[in-house]
Length: 119
Image 1 (tube, one colour):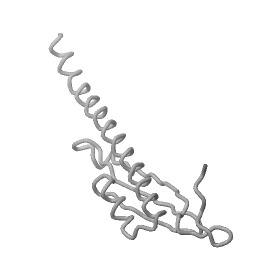
Image 2 (cartoon, rainbow, N blue to C red; image 1 turned 90 degrees about the vertical axis):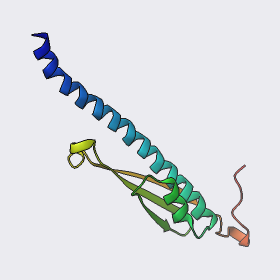
Image 3 (cartoon, one colour; image 1 turned 120 degrees about the vertical axis):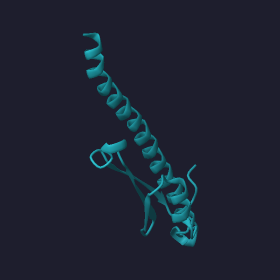
């Protein structure tokens, strides 16, 4: 009787463990997306030409980076796929997204001066 219960419970425990590990991997990928968006926003705000490449280097594999420059700010959005574990990859796949906004440093303030640093 114990063997039958173990045979039924063991696959469920393995599935639960796989889902928990996938959750940790997905959380790590989300953190990398947030970091990549922040790094890209800082680089674009400084006026770096390769801000998208900098953000892509910090993003998880397969991520896409979009940079939108407005009059006084820069918005960077990072999207990355996070497939589920094993055969459940197609069913449990999620799309992670993070965005960051930074004030542009190359915009002149009133009187032609640069944007002042916050005190």
